[in-house]
Length: 118
Image (cartoon, rainbow, N blue to C red; front, side, top):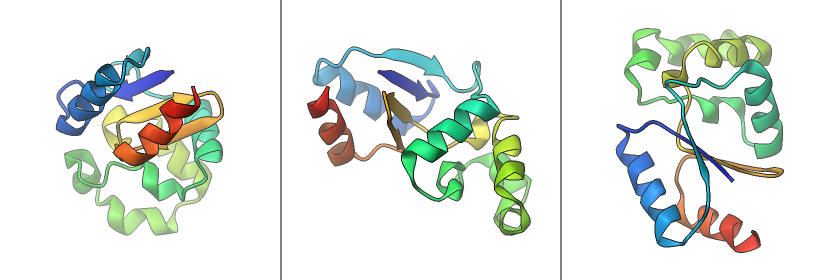
């Protein structure tokens, strides 16, 4: 299981605590220091099944500075994936990856369901 997070993110801290409280073994990956590649993002997007816009950190400073709320609707999926791969701070986190399952954002019920399968 891979836990992609940003150490200073409050939601990521809650998610890490959740994993630890549930005795889940995981490999932690810092999204800022080890930004996801375009191929990883494409794979995660396909496995997740949600719209690609759900992979953007819409509350982040960089997202707002780049005015992406206005720009994303005119961008192709490939352009959006390319943009996401340029900076981990654009990517919504935490991300939990287990085999063919990819969860974006921390929703405890979804995470419980996934770890119950492991």
